Length: 608
Image (tube, rainbow, N blue to C red):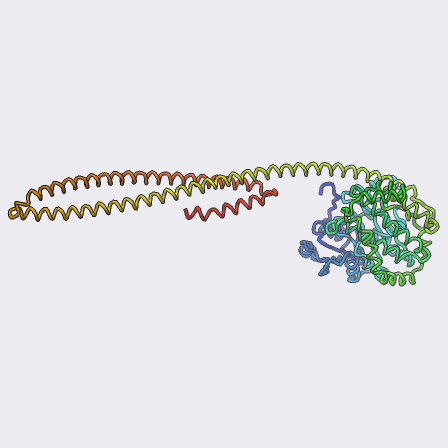
């Protein structure tokens, strides 16, 4: 992509060769990123083992790995087990001293493994090392150290800040950090497995925070080396199969798991209630621009119970809320349902720990760093901290100068992003209205075309009915002509009989002279009758010729009607072509209806 950092991983020069590390990559439908990721791992050194644990991907990433990375060892799960279980599977399958966990949407800069290994080997008590992670284009910070607030939300120090921000350039190249980001970290494999690896129950998100806390509490240290760089497409893979509500649920649940498992008993009695209060407080910022706003809730609470009741009474019984607003309550219900298992894990961990909470609270800062930057949320946090005496537990520190600069920078960027999103939302709304208007116009056009087609079909039906009626009339006239011809034939036969009588009479003239006059009279009458019959025959012939001419004229009209019918069929085909042009619109169903009507009409036309 334009603007992304690019490295030449095909160079024959390898900056570092190590056979002591296994790269573990958890893949789930990461075909877009996996090739660049694996190429950057190969470039770290020939001796490093690469294991890909595939969580039942449905894209072609597995085939891509088999085709282009034959040296990569691949393990496939039959279902998506989440990052934590899959990462643990890879660590158990490795055979090296160290294990590096790398997300599929991460690219390692050359020399990453050498710098990370040097930091890991710098002291026996160092069990895990983090690196500086940048955005994919290398312009902003993605991770520059890990902190955690008192309710269990991990914080990525420097996230979103420009890489040249003064508060970042002044930091030490190597220093202690609360945790290493699981997207690009190196750990001592023996220690990793010894303390149970990532907690399987976390599935994804904050598992690295929990792992970091356990390392420190069990006597180990975690460092960050900022000379080792990784480039991360933030939520490049998880954002594709997890909705914002699902990610919020995992964050809320895992934060509660962290608090319940890790803090000592003397601190848990204060921190847990505060965590539950903050869980409820996070519903408010997630309601923004929906049924309620942060300002509505703040003003109602400030006005006392009556104002809260007034606010609730103003709402309907059913209010639409974003799904993410349900993530906190669902997380509490979930944790309560598995409380026995969580407490069993807590008891085992507390039994093994070598450092107390006070050691960690004194060593690290940022426990009051808020997860949401709005006034109401920060005021609730301050009120809880004071009321529950959290400063006595965590210290009186508020965000230090660097954190304050970071908060202000983040808040400004968030406001700019919110304004941009509002403008984009308005533009999208206008665009949607335009599309709806265009769709309505197209629908009306299709409706008009359908009505015109129906009228044309009615005309065709009327023409065909008239043609059938004329055909029937011609058939009736033909039958009449045949009947008249039969009458004429009978008359001719009668004349022939009478001519025979005349002949016999003439033969007997000599003997029957006395009958001559009668015969002559009879002959005259017969002659007159014959003339009359001949005239009648002539009239019949003239009528027959006239009816035949009418039949020819009717046949011409039928041919004209059939030509018109063909024209109508061409019009119908033209209309169908026009309907094809708008088949991507909602009016496509109308087109299908017209098509079925046209098909239903064709058999009757073929019979005609």
